Length: 344
Length: 252
Image (tube, rainbow over all chains, first blue to last red; front, side, top):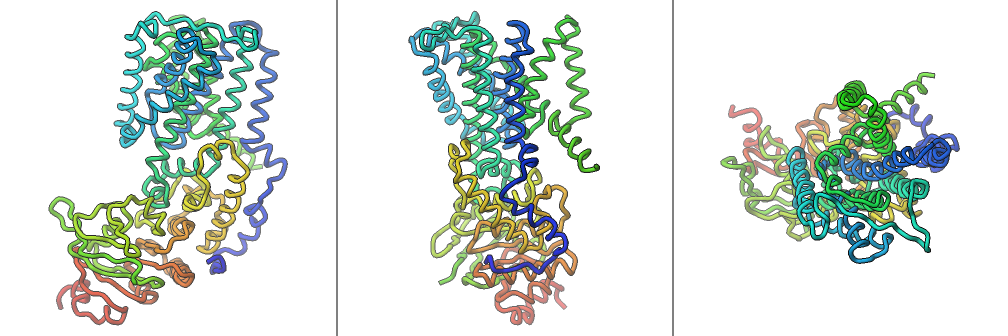
Protein backbone atom coordinates (compact mmCIF):
# COMPACT_ATOMS: atom_id res chain seq x y z
CA UNK A 1 0.00 0.00 0.00
CA UNK A 2 2.93 2.32 0.61
CA UNK A 3 3.68 2.28 -3.11
CA UNK A 4 0.54 4.11 -3.99
CA UNK A 5 1.37 7.69 -4.70
CA UNK A 6 -1.17 10.46 -4.46
CA UNK A 7 -2.76 12.12 -7.40
CA UNK A 8 -0.68 15.12 -6.35
CA UNK A 9 -3.31 17.43 -5.05
CA UNK A 10 -0.91 20.17 -3.97
CA UNK A 11 2.61 19.42 -5.04
CA UNK A 12 3.94 22.95 -4.89
CA UNK A 13 3.02 23.41 -1.23
CA UNK A 14 4.30 20.00 -0.34
CA UNK A 15 7.88 20.75 -1.30
CA UNK A 16 8.18 23.66 1.09
CA UNK A 17 7.24 21.69 4.12
CA UNK A 18 8.88 18.44 3.20
CA UNK A 19 12.09 18.82 5.19
CA UNK A 20 10.24 19.91 8.29
CA UNK A 21 7.40 17.40 8.21
CA UNK A 22 9.55 14.32 8.22
CA UNK A 23 12.00 16.28 10.41
CA UNK A 24 13.19 13.55 12.72
CA UNK A 25 15.54 16.07 14.33
CA UNK A 26 14.35 19.48 15.44
CA UNK A 27 16.69 22.46 15.32
CA UNK A 28 18.17 23.62 18.67
CA UNK A 29 15.92 26.69 18.60
CA UNK A 30 12.81 24.56 17.99
CA UNK A 31 13.80 22.35 20.88
CA UNK A 32 14.21 25.38 23.15
CA UNK A 33 10.73 26.52 22.17
CA UNK A 34 9.20 23.10 22.84
CA UNK A 35 7.45 22.32 26.09
CA UNK A 36 9.54 19.32 26.97
CA UNK A 37 12.95 20.97 26.60
CA UNK A 38 12.38 24.71 26.89
CA UNK A 39 9.57 24.49 29.39
CA UNK A 40 11.45 22.06 31.62
CA UNK A 41 14.61 24.21 31.53
CA UNK A 42 12.61 27.30 32.48
CA UNK A 43 10.96 25.38 35.30
CA UNK A 44 14.29 24.12 36.66
CA UNK A 45 15.67 27.65 36.49
CA UNK A 46 12.74 29.10 38.43
CA UNK A 47 13.00 26.34 41.05
CA UNK A 48 16.75 26.95 41.43
CA UNK A 49 16.47 30.74 41.67
CA UNK A 50 13.33 31.00 43.80
CA UNK A 51 15.07 30.27 47.17
CA UNK A 52 17.19 33.40 46.62
CA UNK A 53 13.98 35.43 46.62
CA UNK A 54 12.08 33.64 49.38
CA UNK A 55 12.66 35.76 52.49
CA UNK A 56 10.98 33.88 55.32
CA UNK A 57 9.25 30.70 56.42
CA UNK A 58 5.85 32.03 55.39
CA UNK A 59 6.98 32.54 51.81
CA UNK A 60 8.51 29.07 51.79
CA UNK A 61 5.16 27.73 52.97
CA UNK A 62 3.39 29.42 50.07
CA UNK A 63 5.93 28.08 47.54
CA UNK A 64 5.59 24.54 48.91
CA UNK A 65 1.78 24.77 48.86
CA UNK A 66 1.97 25.85 45.21
CA UNK A 67 4.07 22.78 44.43
CA UNK A 68 1.74 20.40 46.26
CA UNK A 69 -1.38 21.88 44.66
CA UNK A 70 0.30 21.82 41.26
CA UNK A 71 0.98 18.07 41.48
CA UNK A 72 -2.75 17.45 42.06
CA UNK A 73 -3.77 19.89 39.34
CA UNK A 74 -1.34 18.42 36.77
CA UNK A 75 -2.91 15.00 37.34
CA UNK A 76 -6.41 16.43 37.25
CA UNK A 77 -5.58 18.25 34.01
CA UNK A 78 -4.77 14.89 32.40
CA UNK A 79 -8.29 13.78 33.34
CA UNK A 80 -10.21 17.01 32.67
CA UNK A 81 -8.14 18.94 30.14
CA UNK A 82 -6.88 16.10 27.98
CA UNK A 83 -9.30 13.18 28.38
CA UNK A 84 -12.36 15.44 28.76
CA UNK A 85 -13.75 13.74 31.88
CA UNK A 86 -14.62 15.60 35.08
CA UNK A 87 -14.00 14.92 38.75
CA UNK A 88 -15.37 16.99 41.61
CA UNK A 89 -13.97 14.56 44.17
CA UNK A 90 -10.21 14.67 43.82
CA UNK A 91 -9.74 16.38 47.19
CA UNK A 92 -10.97 13.04 48.55
CA UNK A 93 -8.02 11.19 46.99
CA UNK A 94 -5.69 13.96 48.18
CA UNK A 95 -6.99 13.54 51.73
CA UNK A 96 -6.79 9.74 51.56
CA UNK A 97 -3.11 10.02 50.64
CA UNK A 98 -2.54 12.45 53.50
CA UNK A 99 -4.37 10.26 56.03
CA UNK A 100 -2.69 7.09 54.77
CA UNK A 101 0.69 8.70 55.52
CA UNK A 102 -0.55 10.06 58.85
CA UNK A 103 -2.08 6.79 60.05
CA UNK A 104 0.58 4.40 58.76
CA UNK A 105 3.42 6.42 60.31
CA UNK A 106 1.82 7.44 63.63
CA UNK A 107 -0.24 4.34 64.46
CA UNK A 108 1.73 1.59 62.76
CA UNK A 109 5.23 3.05 62.96
CA UNK A 110 5.92 2.76 59.24
CA UNK A 111 8.52 5.00 57.64
CA UNK A 112 7.06 7.93 55.68
CA UNK A 113 8.91 6.90 52.54
CA UNK A 114 7.05 3.57 52.71
CA UNK A 115 3.70 5.02 53.78
CA UNK A 116 3.50 7.27 50.72
CA UNK A 117 3.67 4.52 48.05
CA UNK A 118 1.39 2.28 50.15
CA UNK A 119 -1.15 5.09 50.35
CA UNK A 120 -0.83 5.71 46.62
CA UNK A 121 -1.33 2.00 45.95
CA UNK A 122 -4.46 1.91 48.12
CA UNK A 123 -5.90 5.05 46.52
CA UNK A 124 -5.07 3.67 43.08
CA UNK A 125 -6.95 0.45 43.86
CA UNK A 126 -9.93 2.33 45.25
CA UNK A 127 -10.02 4.64 42.22
CA UNK A 128 -9.78 1.62 39.91
CA UNK A 129 -12.70 -0.17 41.57
CA UNK A 130 -14.87 2.96 41.48
CA UNK A 131 -13.84 4.13 38.02
CA UNK A 132 -15.56 1.43 35.97
CA UNK A 133 -19.12 2.12 37.08
CA UNK A 134 -18.57 5.87 37.46
CA UNK A 135 -16.92 6.52 34.11
CA UNK A 136 -19.83 5.01 32.24
CA UNK A 137 -21.43 8.34 33.01
CA UNK A 138 -20.56 11.57 31.30
CA UNK A 139 -21.13 15.29 31.68
CA UNK A 140 -23.27 16.45 34.59
CA UNK A 141 -23.90 12.87 35.74
CA UNK A 142 -20.18 12.15 36.01
CA UNK A 143 -19.74 15.40 37.94
CA UNK A 144 -22.47 14.32 40.39
CA UNK A 145 -21.01 10.84 40.87
CA UNK A 146 -17.47 12.07 41.53
CA UNK A 147 -18.84 14.73 43.85
CA UNK A 148 -20.49 11.92 45.78
CA UNK A 149 -17.19 10.06 46.04
CA UNK A 150 -15.51 13.11 47.55
CA UNK A 151 -18.33 13.71 50.01
CA UNK A 152 -18.32 10.08 51.18
CA UNK A 153 -14.55 10.15 51.75
CA UNK A 154 -14.94 13.40 53.69
CA UNK A 155 -17.66 11.92 55.91
CA UNK A 156 -15.75 8.71 56.59
CA UNK A 157 -12.64 10.67 57.62
CA UNK A 158 -14.67 12.94 59.91
CA UNK A 159 -16.63 10.09 61.55
CA UNK A 160 -14.05 7.36 62.07
CA UNK A 161 -12.40 9.28 64.92
CA UNK A 162 -10.73 6.17 66.42
CA UNK A 163 -8.55 6.01 63.31
CA UNK A 164 -8.42 9.54 61.95
CA UNK A 165 -8.84 11.73 65.01
CA UNK A 166 -12.19 12.94 63.66
CA UNK A 167 -12.89 16.60 62.89
CA UNK A 168 -9.96 17.72 65.06
CA UNK A 169 -7.47 16.07 62.74
CA UNK A 170 -4.31 14.27 63.76
CA UNK A 171 -0.59 14.84 64.10
CA UNK A 172 1.91 13.30 61.73
CA UNK A 173 5.30 12.45 63.21
CA UNK A 174 8.27 14.13 61.54
CA UNK A 175 9.95 12.07 58.87
CA UNK A 176 13.53 11.02 59.51
CA UNK A 177 16.06 10.02 56.88
CA UNK A 178 19.41 8.63 58.07
CA UNK A 179 18.93 10.24 61.45
CA UNK A 180 18.12 13.66 60.02
CA UNK A 181 14.67 15.02 60.80
CA UNK A 182 12.99 16.45 57.69
CA UNK A 183 11.55 19.60 59.13
CA UNK A 184 10.99 23.11 57.83
CA UNK A 185 10.48 24.92 54.56
CA UNK A 186 14.08 24.88 53.37
CA UNK A 187 14.14 21.08 53.21
CA UNK A 188 10.59 20.46 52.01
CA UNK A 189 10.98 23.03 49.25
CA UNK A 190 13.44 20.73 47.50
CA UNK A 191 11.49 17.54 48.18
CA UNK A 192 8.27 19.00 46.78
CA UNK A 193 10.19 20.55 43.85
CA UNK A 194 11.58 17.13 42.94
CA UNK A 195 8.09 15.58 42.94
CA UNK A 196 6.72 18.52 40.95
CA UNK A 197 9.38 18.17 38.26
CA UNK A 198 8.66 14.44 38.11
CA UNK A 199 4.89 15.08 37.76
CA UNK A 200 5.40 17.58 34.94
CA UNK A 201 7.87 15.33 33.16
CA UNK A 202 5.47 12.37 33.35
CA UNK A 203 2.55 14.50 32.19
CA UNK A 204 4.43 15.87 29.17
CA UNK A 205 5.62 12.36 28.28
CA UNK A 206 2.18 10.78 28.52
CA UNK A 207 0.52 13.46 26.41
CA UNK A 208 3.02 13.05 23.59
CA UNK A 209 2.68 9.26 23.38
CA UNK A 210 0.23 6.69 22.02
CA UNK A 211 -1.55 6.74 25.40
CA UNK A 212 -1.84 10.53 25.32
CA UNK A 213 -3.21 10.53 21.79
CA UNK A 214 -5.76 7.89 22.79
CA UNK A 215 -6.86 10.15 25.70
CA UNK A 216 -7.09 13.27 23.56
CA UNK A 217 -8.72 11.23 20.81
CA UNK A 218 -11.51 9.94 23.02
CA UNK A 219 -12.06 13.52 24.19
CA UNK A 220 -12.29 14.83 20.62
CA UNK A 221 -14.40 12.06 19.06
CA UNK A 222 -15.11 9.14 21.36
CA UNK A 223 -16.82 6.89 18.78
CA UNK A 224 -14.07 7.47 16.22
CA UNK A 225 -11.38 6.61 18.78
CA UNK A 226 -13.27 3.45 19.76
CA UNK A 227 -13.61 2.39 16.13
CA UNK A 228 -9.88 3.06 15.61
CA UNK A 229 -9.17 0.42 18.25
CA UNK A 230 -8.94 2.53 21.40
CA UNK A 231 -10.57 0.75 24.33
CA UNK A 232 -12.08 4.02 25.55
CA UNK A 233 -13.37 2.60 28.85
CA UNK A 234 -9.92 1.28 29.70
CA UNK A 235 -8.26 4.61 28.96
CA UNK A 236 -10.80 6.59 30.99
CA UNK A 237 -10.19 4.27 33.94
CA UNK A 238 -6.43 4.50 33.42
CA UNK A 239 -6.32 8.30 33.50
CA UNK A 240 -8.72 8.46 36.44
CA UNK A 241 -6.47 6.14 38.45
CA UNK A 242 -3.31 8.00 37.40
CA UNK A 243 -4.76 11.36 38.48
CA UNK A 244 -6.01 9.88 41.77
CA UNK A 245 -2.56 8.45 42.51
CA UNK A 246 -0.93 11.82 41.80
CA UNK A 247 -3.41 13.48 44.18
CA UNK A 248 -2.62 10.84 46.81
CA UNK A 249 1.14 11.43 46.55
CA UNK A 250 0.60 15.18 46.87
CA UNK A 251 -1.56 14.50 49.94
CA UNK A 252 1.23 12.45 51.54
CA UNK A 253 3.69 15.29 50.88
CA UNK A 254 1.28 17.78 52.45
CA UNK A 255 0.81 15.59 55.53
CA UNK A 256 4.54 15.19 56.15
CA UNK A 257 5.31 18.82 55.44
CA UNK A 258 2.66 20.35 57.70
CA UNK A 259 2.83 17.44 60.19
CA UNK A 260 -0.90 17.76 60.70
CA UNK A 261 -3.94 16.59 58.76
CA UNK A 262 -7.62 17.59 59.02
CA UNK A 263 -10.77 16.39 57.21
CA UNK A 264 -10.86 19.86 55.61
CA UNK A 265 -8.43 18.44 53.04
CA UNK A 266 -11.24 16.24 51.68
CA UNK A 267 -13.83 19.01 51.57
CA UNK A 268 -15.96 19.72 48.53
CA UNK A 269 -14.52 23.24 48.31
CA UNK A 270 -11.02 21.83 48.13
CA UNK A 271 -12.09 19.70 45.14
CA UNK A 272 -13.63 22.73 43.48
CA UNK A 273 -10.43 24.68 44.08
CA UNK A 274 -8.40 22.04 42.22
CA UNK A 275 -10.81 22.04 39.27
CA UNK A 276 -10.77 25.85 39.21
CA UNK A 277 -6.97 25.80 39.03
CA UNK A 278 -7.13 23.50 35.99
CA UNK A 279 -9.62 25.73 34.17
CA UNK A 280 -7.99 29.01 35.23
CA UNK A 281 -4.49 27.99 34.15
CA UNK A 282 -5.74 26.48 30.92
CA UNK A 283 -7.25 23.10 30.08
CA UNK A 284 -5.05 20.67 28.18
CA UNK A 285 -1.88 22.50 29.15
CA UNK A 286 0.55 20.97 31.65
CA UNK A 287 2.28 24.26 32.39
CA UNK A 288 -1.14 25.88 32.49
CA UNK A 289 -1.96 23.58 35.40
CA UNK A 290 1.18 24.75 37.18
CA UNK A 291 0.41 28.42 36.53
CA UNK A 292 -3.22 27.96 37.62
CA UNK A 293 -2.08 26.36 40.86
CA UNK A 294 0.51 29.11 41.45
CA UNK A 295 -1.81 32.06 40.77
CA UNK A 296 -4.76 30.72 42.74
CA UNK A 297 -2.51 29.80 45.68
CA UNK A 298 -0.73 33.16 45.82
CA UNK A 299 -3.68 35.43 45.03
CA UNK A 300 -5.68 34.80 48.23
CA UNK A 301 -2.48 35.45 50.24
CA UNK A 302 -1.89 38.76 48.47
CA UNK A 303 -5.50 39.77 48.92
CA UNK A 304 -5.49 38.99 52.65
CA UNK A 305 -4.91 42.71 53.36
CA UNK A 306 -8.34 43.49 52.00
CA UNK A 307 -9.84 41.49 54.87
CA UNK A 308 -13.55 40.97 54.31
CA UNK A 309 -13.34 42.12 50.69
CA UNK A 310 -10.82 39.39 49.88
CA UNK A 311 -13.30 36.92 48.41
CA UNK A 312 -15.12 39.57 46.40
CA UNK A 313 -11.92 40.76 44.76
CA UNK A 314 -10.73 37.20 44.14
CA UNK A 315 -14.04 36.35 42.51
CA UNK A 316 -13.91 39.47 40.38
CA UNK A 317 -10.39 38.69 39.15
CA UNK A 318 -11.40 35.12 38.28
CA UNK A 319 -14.51 36.26 36.42
CA UNK A 320 -12.54 38.84 34.46
CA UNK A 321 -9.85 36.36 33.46
CA UNK A 322 -12.37 33.73 32.38
CA UNK A 323 -14.38 36.25 30.33
CA UNK A 324 -11.36 37.59 28.47
CA UNK A 325 -9.31 34.38 28.43
CA UNK A 326 -11.89 31.60 28.20
CA UNK A 327 -9.24 29.03 27.28
CA UNK A 328 -7.32 29.83 30.47
CA UNK A 329 -4.14 31.79 31.14
CA UNK A 330 -1.41 29.76 29.46
CA UNK A 331 -3.14 28.65 26.21
CA UNK A 332 -4.46 32.19 25.61
CA UNK A 333 -1.14 33.89 26.29
CA UNK A 334 0.96 31.39 24.34
CA UNK A 335 -1.50 31.63 21.43
CA UNK A 336 -1.11 35.42 21.50
CA UNK A 337 2.68 35.16 21.55
CA UNK A 338 2.65 32.74 18.63
CA UNK A 339 0.47 35.05 16.54
CA UNK A 340 2.75 37.99 17.37
CA UNK A 341 5.74 35.93 16.29
CA UNK A 342 4.04 34.86 13.07
CA UNK A 343 3.21 38.43 12.12
CA UNK A 344 6.85 39.51 12.24
CA UNK B 1 -15.11 -18.13 1.50
CA UNK B 2 -16.55 -14.69 1.93
CA UNK B 3 -14.82 -12.12 4.13
CA UNK B 4 -18.02 -10.71 5.59
CA UNK B 5 -21.32 -12.55 5.80
CA UNK B 6 -24.59 -11.28 7.24
CA UNK B 7 -27.41 -13.70 8.05
CA UNK B 8 -31.01 -12.87 8.97
CA UNK B 9 -29.86 -9.59 10.43
CA UNK B 10 -32.55 -7.45 12.10
CA UNK B 11 -32.60 -4.46 14.37
CA UNK B 12 -35.48 -2.38 15.57
CA UNK B 13 -35.58 0.85 17.51
CA UNK B 14 -38.87 0.76 19.38
CA UNK B 15 -41.41 0.10 16.65
CA UNK B 16 -39.13 1.05 13.77
CA UNK B 17 -37.68 -1.91 11.88
CA UNK B 18 -34.46 -0.34 10.62
CA UNK B 19 -33.03 -3.59 9.21
CA UNK B 20 -35.16 -6.67 8.53
CA UNK B 21 -33.97 -10.21 7.76
CA UNK B 22 -30.99 -9.09 5.77
CA UNK B 23 -28.69 -11.63 4.11
CA UNK B 24 -25.64 -10.87 2.02
CA UNK B 25 -21.98 -11.74 1.65
CA UNK B 26 -18.92 -9.79 0.60
CA UNK B 27 -15.91 -11.43 -1.04
CA UNK B 28 -12.40 -10.37 -0.19
CA UNK B 29 -10.66 -7.99 -2.57
CA UNK B 30 -13.74 -6.35 -4.06
CA UNK B 31 -15.37 -2.94 -3.96
CA UNK B 32 -18.87 -3.40 -2.70
CA UNK B 33 -21.45 -0.62 -2.64
CA UNK B 34 -24.59 -0.33 -0.58
CA UNK B 35 -27.16 2.06 -1.98
CA UNK B 36 -30.76 2.92 -1.29
CA UNK B 37 -33.05 5.88 -0.64
CA UNK B 38 -32.62 7.95 2.54
CA UNK B 39 -33.71 5.99 5.59
CA UNK B 40 -33.11 2.64 3.89
CA UNK B 41 -30.87 1.51 6.77
CA UNK B 42 -27.43 1.88 5.18
CA UNK B 43 -25.73 3.67 8.06
CA UNK B 44 -27.57 1.46 10.55
CA UNK B 45 -26.08 -1.54 8.78
CA UNK B 46 -22.59 -0.01 9.12
CA UNK B 47 -23.21 0.64 12.80
CA UNK B 48 -24.24 -2.99 13.24
CA UNK B 49 -21.20 -4.34 11.42
CA UNK B 50 -18.75 -2.13 13.34
CA UNK B 51 -20.27 -2.98 16.73
CA UNK B 52 -21.85 0.38 17.57
CA UNK B 53 -25.27 -1.29 17.59
CA UNK B 54 -26.23 -4.72 18.85
CA UNK B 55 -28.56 -6.57 16.46
CA UNK B 56 -32.04 -7.59 17.64
CA UNK B 57 -31.61 -10.84 15.73
CA UNK B 58 -29.33 -12.53 13.24
CA UNK B 59 -25.61 -12.94 12.89
CA UNK B 60 -22.60 -11.23 11.35
CA UNK B 61 -19.52 -13.27 10.42
CA UNK B 62 -16.06 -11.97 9.69
CA UNK B 63 -13.99 -14.88 8.35
CA UNK B 64 -16.68 -17.22 9.73
CA UNK B 65 -16.23 -15.79 13.24
CA UNK B 66 -19.44 -14.45 14.76
CA UNK B 67 -18.85 -10.75 15.54
CA UNK B 68 -22.31 -9.40 16.34
CA UNK B 69 -22.24 -7.82 19.82
CA UNK B 70 -18.47 -7.46 20.02
CA UNK B 71 -17.20 -4.02 21.01
CA UNK B 72 -15.90 -1.71 18.26
CA UNK B 73 -12.28 -1.68 19.46
CA UNK B 74 -12.20 -5.50 19.41
CA UNK B 75 -13.50 -5.46 15.84
CA UNK B 76 -10.81 -2.92 14.90
CA UNK B 77 -8.28 -5.46 16.15
CA UNK B 78 -9.87 -8.04 13.82
CA UNK B 79 -9.26 -5.80 10.83
CA UNK B 80 -12.39 -3.69 10.58
CA UNK B 81 -12.15 0.04 9.99
CA UNK B 82 -14.60 2.74 8.97
CA UNK B 83 -15.33 6.39 8.30
CA UNK B 84 -18.41 8.34 9.32
CA UNK B 85 -21.09 10.08 7.33
CA UNK B 86 -21.10 12.94 9.84
CA UNK B 87 -17.47 13.77 10.45
CA UNK B 88 -15.97 12.38 13.63
CA UNK B 89 -12.71 14.29 13.62
CA UNK B 90 -10.74 15.02 16.77
CA UNK B 91 -10.84 18.80 16.53
CA UNK B 92 -8.54 19.14 19.55
CA UNK B 93 -5.66 17.53 17.67
CA UNK B 94 -3.57 18.20 14.57
CA UNK B 95 -4.29 16.45 11.28
CA UNK B 96 -1.42 14.00 11.55
CA UNK B 97 -2.28 13.25 15.20
CA UNK B 98 -5.77 12.27 14.05
CA UNK B 99 -4.25 9.78 11.65
CA UNK B 100 -1.87 8.57 14.37
CA UNK B 101 -4.87 7.72 16.58
CA UNK B 102 -5.84 5.41 13.74
CA UNK B 103 -2.43 3.78 14.15
CA UNK B 104 -3.20 3.01 17.82
CA UNK B 105 -3.36 -0.77 17.46
CA UNK B 106 0.12 -0.95 15.96
CA UNK B 107 1.81 1.08 18.71
CA UNK B 108 3.19 0.29 22.14
CA UNK B 109 0.54 1.54 24.55
CA UNK B 110 2.16 0.45 27.80
CA UNK B 111 1.42 3.25 30.29
CA UNK B 112 4.71 2.95 32.17
CA UNK B 113 6.77 3.00 28.98
CA UNK B 114 4.84 6.07 27.83
CA UNK B 115 5.23 7.82 31.22
CA UNK B 116 9.01 7.34 31.08
CA UNK B 117 9.16 8.02 27.34
CA UNK B 118 11.36 5.00 26.72
CA UNK B 119 13.36 5.03 23.48
CA UNK B 120 11.03 2.44 21.95
CA UNK B 121 8.11 4.86 22.35
CA UNK B 122 10.06 7.63 20.62
CA UNK B 123 11.10 5.28 17.80
CA UNK B 124 7.58 3.89 17.42
CA UNK B 125 6.05 7.37 17.25
CA UNK B 126 8.61 8.52 14.73
CA UNK B 127 7.88 5.56 12.45
CA UNK B 128 4.13 6.00 12.93
CA UNK B 129 4.34 9.67 12.03
CA UNK B 130 6.25 8.83 8.87
CA UNK B 131 3.70 6.19 7.87
CA UNK B 132 0.80 8.53 8.61
CA UNK B 133 2.36 11.30 6.51
CA UNK B 134 2.56 8.80 3.62
CA UNK B 135 -1.13 8.06 4.04
CA UNK B 136 -1.96 11.77 4.14
CA UNK B 137 0.04 12.22 0.93
CA UNK B 138 -1.95 9.41 -0.60
CA UNK B 139 -5.30 11.05 0.12
CA UNK B 140 -3.97 14.43 -1.00
CA UNK B 141 -3.41 16.09 2.37
CA UNK B 142 0.36 16.38 2.09
CA UNK B 143 0.25 20.12 2.78
CA UNK B 144 -1.84 19.89 5.93
CA UNK B 145 0.32 17.59 8.09
CA UNK B 146 0.62 19.76 11.18
CA UNK B 147 -2.52 21.83 10.64
CA UNK B 148 -5.01 21.96 13.50
CA UNK B 149 -7.88 19.73 12.40
CA UNK B 150 -10.33 22.44 13.46
CA UNK B 151 -8.99 24.83 10.83
CA UNK B 152 -9.31 22.44 7.86
CA UNK B 153 -12.12 22.62 5.27
CA UNK B 154 -14.85 19.97 5.07
CA UNK B 155 -13.50 18.26 1.97
CA UNK B 156 -10.08 17.84 3.56
CA UNK B 157 -11.60 16.41 6.75
CA UNK B 158 -13.48 13.78 4.70
CA UNK B 159 -10.13 12.63 3.34
CA UNK B 160 -8.53 12.86 6.77
CA UNK B 161 -11.10 10.32 7.99
CA UNK B 162 -10.08 7.95 5.21
CA UNK B 163 -6.38 8.35 6.09
CA UNK B 164 -7.17 7.66 9.76
CA UNK B 165 -9.17 4.55 8.85
CA UNK B 166 -6.33 3.31 6.61
CA UNK B 167 -3.71 3.88 9.32
CA UNK B 168 -5.11 0.87 11.16
CA UNK B 169 -4.24 -1.30 8.13
CA UNK B 170 -7.71 -2.83 7.92
CA UNK B 171 -8.71 -5.82 5.83
CA UNK B 172 -12.23 -4.51 5.53
CA UNK B 173 -12.81 -0.77 5.14
CA UNK B 174 -16.31 0.68 5.42
CA UNK B 175 -16.75 4.14 3.93
CA UNK B 176 -19.97 5.96 4.82
CA UNK B 177 -20.70 8.50 2.07
CA UNK B 178 -17.10 9.52 1.41
CA UNK B 179 -18.14 11.84 -1.43
CA UNK B 180 -21.05 13.59 0.32
CA UNK B 181 -20.67 17.34 0.17
CA UNK B 182 -17.69 17.24 -2.17
CA UNK B 183 -17.49 18.95 -5.55
CA UNK B 184 -16.89 17.05 -8.76
CA UNK B 185 -13.10 17.34 -8.72
CA UNK B 186 -12.89 16.28 -5.09
CA UNK B 187 -15.20 13.35 -5.80
CA UNK B 188 -12.90 12.25 -8.58
CA UNK B 189 -9.95 12.37 -6.19
CA UNK B 190 -11.79 10.29 -3.61
CA UNK B 191 -12.71 7.90 -6.38
CA UNK B 192 -9.00 7.46 -7.24
CA UNK B 193 -8.13 6.93 -3.59
CA UNK B 194 -10.78 4.22 -3.16
CA UNK B 195 -9.64 2.36 -6.24
CA UNK B 196 -6.02 2.59 -5.09
CA UNK B 197 -6.94 1.29 -1.64
CA UNK B 198 -8.89 -1.62 -3.12
CA UNK B 199 -6.03 -2.45 -5.47
CA UNK B 200 -3.69 -2.67 -2.48
CA UNK B 201 -5.75 -5.60 -1.18
CA UNK B 202 -8.22 -3.95 1.19
CA UNK B 203 -11.84 -4.95 0.74
CA UNK B 204 -13.95 -1.81 0.50
CA UNK B 205 -17.62 -1.43 1.37
CA UNK B 206 -19.13 1.84 0.34
CA UNK B 207 -22.35 3.65 1.22
CA UNK B 208 -22.81 6.36 -1.34
CA UNK B 209 -25.45 8.47 -3.07
CA UNK B 210 -23.25 9.62 -5.93
CA UNK B 211 -24.38 7.16 -8.60
CA UNK B 212 -21.61 8.07 -11.00
CA UNK B 213 -19.05 7.12 -8.37
CA UNK B 214 -20.91 3.96 -7.35
CA UNK B 215 -21.53 2.66 -10.85
CA UNK B 216 -18.00 3.48 -11.92
CA UNK B 217 -15.99 1.67 -9.28
CA UNK B 218 -18.17 -1.04 -7.70
CA UNK B 219 -17.73 -4.73 -8.40
CA UNK B 220 -20.94 -5.51 -6.61
CA UNK B 221 -23.93 -3.49 -5.41
CA UNK B 222 -26.49 -4.17 -2.69
CA UNK B 223 -29.70 -2.14 -2.81
CA UNK B 224 -31.61 -1.56 0.43
CA UNK B 225 -35.08 -0.14 0.85
CA UNK B 226 -36.91 0.15 4.18
CA UNK B 227 -34.35 -2.09 5.83
CA UNK B 228 -34.82 -4.94 3.35
CA UNK B 229 -32.75 -6.17 0.45
CA UNK B 230 -34.27 -4.89 -2.76
CA UNK B 231 -31.69 -6.18 -5.20
CA UNK B 232 -28.06 -7.09 -5.58
CA UNK B 233 -25.61 -7.80 -8.35
CA UNK B 234 -23.21 -6.08 -10.71
CA UNK B 235 -23.75 -2.38 -11.50
CA UNK B 236 -25.25 -3.40 -14.84
CA UNK B 237 -27.78 -5.81 -13.26
CA UNK B 238 -28.81 -3.31 -10.60
CA UNK B 239 -29.23 -0.47 -13.07
CA UNK B 240 -31.63 -2.56 -15.14
CA UNK B 241 -33.61 -3.91 -12.19
CA UNK B 242 -37.19 -2.53 -12.37
CA UNK B 243 -37.63 -2.74 -8.57
CA UNK B 244 -34.60 -0.48 -8.07
CA UNK B 245 -35.83 2.03 -10.60
CA UNK B 246 -39.21 2.06 -8.89
CA UNK B 247 -37.68 2.61 -5.45
CA UNK B 248 -35.68 5.57 -6.66
CA UNK B 249 -38.11 7.18 -9.06
CA UNK B 250 -41.44 5.84 -7.84
CA UNK B 251 -43.68 3.55 -9.88
CA UNK B 252 -43.99 4.87 -13.40
